[in-house]
Image (cartoon, rainbow, N blue to C red; front, side, top):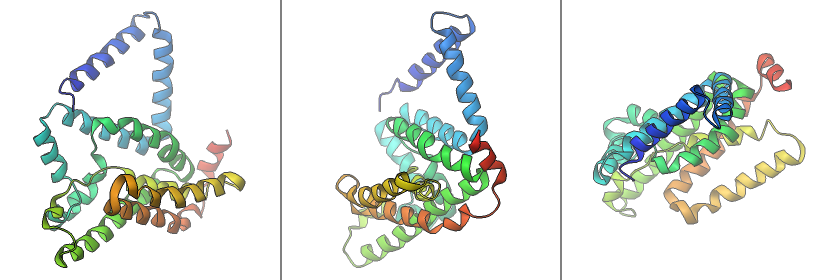
Length: 239
C-alpha cells in the first residue's frame, strides 16, 4: 500500500472543501456533489455508515508497513485461529475491513446494492440481512475448513489466512434484490448471479467462492424479509 495515501487523501479533502467554501473554479459543482452525498447518506444511513467505516479502516491500513497491515487484517479475519479465540468479535468486525485499493468496488456496491435494498426494505431489515449472510456463510465455511484441516486436505497454515470484506453480506443483499425487480430485469440479475458467482472461483479460489455461493443462497432464502408492511419505504420509492 502506498505509504502517503492517508495524508494525500486528507489533503485532497481539504482542498475540495476550500474550493467549495471560497467558490474557486469548480466549487459550485463540488457543493452540489457534497449536497447529493449528504442526501444519499440521510436516505441510506446504514449503507453510509458501513461505507465510511470501510474507508476509515482502509486509511488506517494505508499508513502501515505491509507486515503490520497483514497482522491487523488477520486479527479481524474469520479464519480458524481467530474464530476459535474471538468468534463474536471477528464475525462482526470482519465485514468492516478491507484495503484502500478495494474502495471503488465497495463504493459501487454501496450505490448499486446496499442503497437500493435499504431504500426498499428499510434500515433494520437491511442490516439484519447483511449480517445474516455474512455470519451464516462465514460460520459454515469455517466449520467445513476445520474439518478439511483435520483430515489433512488443507495445510495447517490455512488456519491463519486473511478473510475479511463486505462481499458475503453484499451478495446476500444482491440475492434479496432479485425480489425487488420485475420481468426481464429480475431474470437477468438472477441468472447473472447464479452463473457469475460460482464462476468467480477462477479469481477468488474455492474457499472464498464457497462462502460467496452460500451468502447468495442465504439471500435467496431470506425472501420472507421482503414480505410484510413496508408502506413508508414503498412510498419513497414512488417519488
